[in-house]
Length: 171
Image (cartoon, rainbow, N blue to C red; front, top):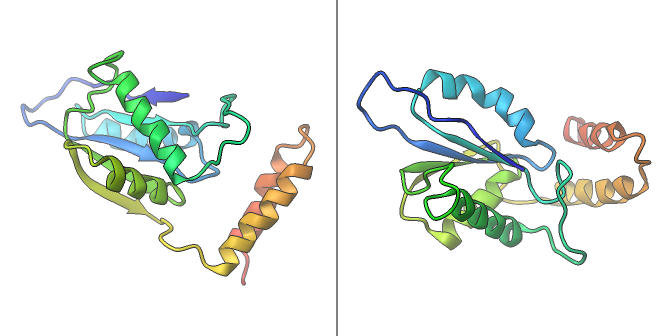
């Protein structure tokens, strides 16, 4: 799924930027829209593109797919083409835009910028992002993977609780 904040009426003739957001692994477009709604309201005329990664919000991906930066970046590229000027025209990717990566979304955003190099990309904004996965964080993801596979579908809160314990722990 994806959501595009509609372009609002500008009080100025100055062209503003658009913003494409790659969120953290446990965020969704819904949670990021709460965070970024004030930005969109403050700067009329910008568009903010929020999107869910494959596997989130009832989306799927093919068995055997590796959910790495290369795959997620190619999904973003396909999405921009689908909703851009050659597609549904819901988001103007030819207009200057900044790519924001939050948390683990920073590595997806960095990979996308380095690989696809869109001419309208004006900058990369990395917010609390990962540039290196240290042994502790690697073990957190490994343990999370094991726990997530065992968590019952009736308790979707358990994986988030488990992950939060590691992120906010003293070690």
